[in-house]
Length: 245
Ligand code: 5GP
Image (tube, rainbow, N blue to C red):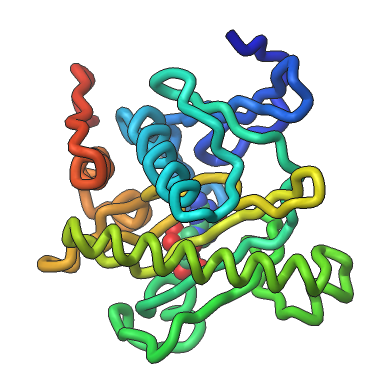
């Protein structure tokens, strides 16, 4: 039994609680969905429980493959125990196929396969919509050291290779995703979450999004897409009595 104390931080999809152990925290996954700077808000029924299980699957996979991460174990349906890291204020985005802000910024059509994996660094600042920064900004502003950037980049590439392979087997294309990293006793750990809230997953045959873009773009059956990803990954059929609005 972990005694929960204060809320450390609350984001768009999660709440993080301190525990009596200063090295551990509890992540609680919410059903709430927010997009476009909070202009669009909604609830995806079951998202919290589904993302909790998807993150359990993803982080366990990374641990098995030797990628250091914050996950310790799932506590209950909506929460998991993690190492209490200090988040590095740099969001790392990994892209295999053009979508989202890359399409908007460059005019390249969504769905264009990139000749090589693109790694982008953004300042973690919701108010500013996580602006793109380069490596010299990161070191100049003291956000992370050159050594930390190298570690984050090589872990991001490893995560991309591992997830791409696993998802390919269940007919899901990994378009792009964002990662956050945390400092923990001199180590850098993959932290935050890896879920349809933070990745673009397209069905390999229909190219339909199975992720938060369904909510952002009003494509319908958002909860169904989240359930589908969980089911394909783990075989677990999430059920709820609640009806989608
Ligand atoms: P883009 O820069 O194209 O909007 O996003 C690239 C990837 O990072 C996508 O998989 C997207 O879902 C994820 N991403 C970007 N910004 C955020 C954010 O603020 N929150 C979450 N959860 N994911 C994000």
